[in-house]
Length: 167
Image (cartoon, rainbow, N blue to C red; front, side, top):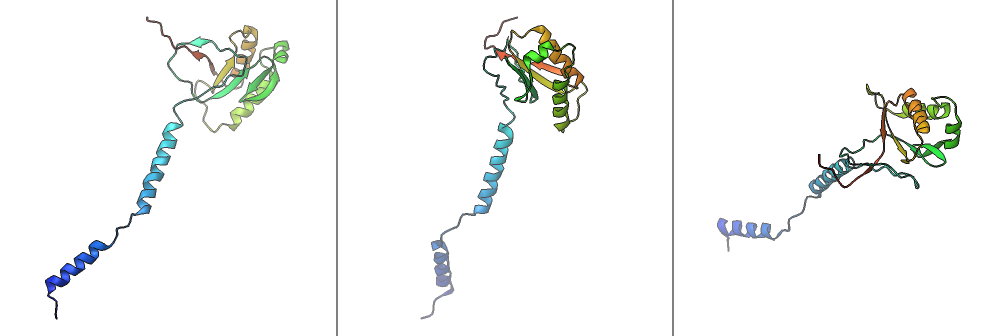
């Protein structure tokens, strides 16, 4: 018996309906890749954490502006560290006569040479992490050495105070 054209068309349609559809994984992988890159780029620029060494009590501030990602100079009870690397003993800097300490300046010049960023008009930025009881004489020598090495945009690290004064 011969089938009509309509019957053939109905059989073909039913066979197509029984086939399982396949998920296109290439498009799905593209979407997830873009999502991962987006999350990585946006999450890394939000917070910078400066970890002071133990025994350093930072001054308290109520400023809202977060610190920028800059070179960190830490003054501990015994050492002076640049980017976490011991450079000089604190007592040696205190005993040094003069304003610009050559060992510290050499390290700061080395760090400036490693940086691929152009030098801002106000000078390279640096953040000093030191105890609030740091003698002014020592801070002055550190800051003079920083300025002589081209780090003129000096910031002092502080702890953020949760309370705000009205005014």
